[in-house]
Image 1 (cartoon, rainbow, N blue to C red):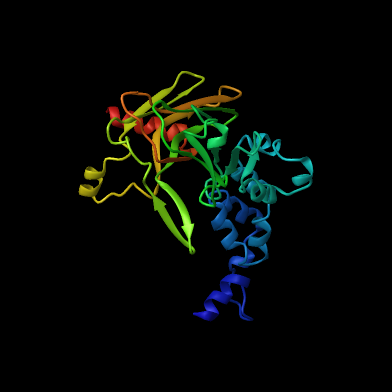
Image 2 (cartoon, rainbow, N blue to C red):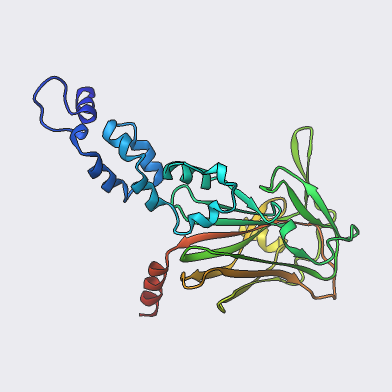
Amino acid sequence: MGSSLSNLNDGTNGLAMGPGLGDIPESCVACVFMYLTPPEICNLAGLNRSFRGAASSDSVWEKKLPANYQDLLDLLPPERYHSLSKKDIFAVLSRPIPFDDDNKELWIDRVTGRVCMAISARGMSITGIEDRRYWNWIPTEESRFHVVAYLQQIWWFEVDGTVRFHLPPGVYSLSFRIHLGRFTKRLGRRVCHFEHTHGWDLKPVRFSLSTSDGQEASCEYYLDDVERNEALGKHKRGYWIEYRVGEFIVNGSEPSTEIQWSMKQIDCTHSKGGLCVDSVFINPIGDVKEHKRKAVLKEA
């Protein structure tokens, strides 16, 4: 078995065994790599010289980069990417790129090469955020932005946000990352406090999103239905939960897409509190053609 694997790598073991992987032209290997994911390409790069050369080819990595990768590079100082190969550019863009006073981040998924985005609570409009009787900023390593907004108590709960960017064509989802209760560390252990957590079981919170080309989506969630959650074996208190708001499509016909979102519970018949707001995520979930094909099959 060891001898056979050796033959695959270098194409010979001193005998006339015929062609092996080492005899495949680099250009042919590059053509195959077009259909593989970046992690798969990197794993195969060590097989032999041809595979290593193809795994560094600009023509291969150009296909793995999103169509708008130059827009992402424009958020960086030119010296960060000047003279880099396409493979190295992919590596740079796969790490978070902060913008808008570091309150927003963009990066490309290391497997799909699609653009992802996160928006910090600091990058949103929160009703009453400047009044410390209602809200506080809590530094924490549990957030990618190292800070979350903590609500002690309020009657009118509303969080809104907007972002405009040239997203590549695709289907995207938007979700809020929320935590019931306040968390701290004591003697190296994570401890949650729920003395302020109330009101989220009385009325649902309404989530919504809209885009500059007229797409809309909305949904409602009870954030703290304790009895129902225990019956289902689901525990929301003390855990970060992502609440998915909906989906939207970018067709690529517009130079940029504006996305607006909100999370609100403005029934002033009761107060609510004990909630951490971390961020909003915009993640790619598919391509437009596949989405349309599924829609047609669903209607059939």
